[in-house]
Amino acid sequence: MGFQSQSGQVGFKTQAAAGTFLNPGAASPNDGVFMQLRGGALGADRELIIPDAEIGGGRDITASVLGPVAYSGEYEFYGRMESIATIINAAFGTTSSTGTGTTYGTDLVGVHVITPVDSSNLPWLSIEESIADGLESFQYTDARVNSFSLECEPDGYLMGTVGLIALTQVAGITKTSAPEWDTTPLLVGTSMTVTIGGLTSYIVRDFSMDFTNNIEDDVFSLGRLTLQDLTAKRRELTTSFTIRPTNIDLWRESVYGSSSATGPLSGAAAQKDVNINITSFENIGTGVTTKFELDIDIPFANIQPFALEPNGDDVIEYSIEMQAIRPTTGTPICTITVTNGFDEIK
Image (tube, rainbow, N blue to C red; front, side, top):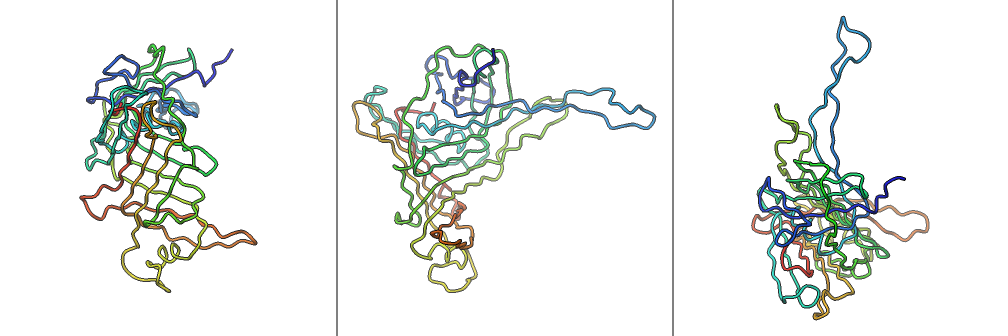
């Protein structure tokens, strides 16, 4: 008969402490959020340990042993503002939430200001994952977000990918029978604004953002079958845009160091602030006019030097990559604000 992918489900819940699974489908206060996916799954990455050939032995492999195992994978999704808040909080590390109103779907509005933590102590996630309907269901404890990316085009939806690594997997669980799906509206490129260096006048053809915590998923220790820990290393954040220019400023700044320079300058690269904002057409609740919103603010970013590449009768466009930097310790490398109908991060 086969198993159809669309009948699966994935739910997330931020853990209160390491080692303690919180069921995303359990009743309050543990209830998490279930994300509708475009594709992807976590999986067990395990290989056989096979001995080398020995002098005096035969030409065939005589035995093999199962090696240590790591659990990792990616989920691809459309950006909905209830579930994405949980993912971004887990990727960055800390959130300050302010809620107004009392009733979900009516007047409750939550504003969640998410910033990266300086330590490697990121939040842990509990994950319930069901592959199809009846094939297999998993429980993951102590998962961390290793990577997170967003992209959007003018004629498309906001889409995301999250890469996760987990310490523990349990198979054969009973999945949540009636999950609380995030069915909030999809966000589209026609309601997105991009500000670079305080200017919104750039003709921006597309947008992408890539964030990674650079967590290792292959460091094992003697006497253990699974990973010992998931330690975040150097943090990296880049944004990319395809731009149809109306002047030469960005190219000169990226290559020369200043928009007024006519040759390369020495010293630090030019710094620019970047802001990406996207809102829904729909209200959060029936009793408010507030929209679902995602706001990404990067105070300092350098443009990766790029070349001008004319081609035939094509209108000049170029793709730029901007590397977020943190020249002062008091200013977060990025602040992401999510406005949705929850008063706290799930």
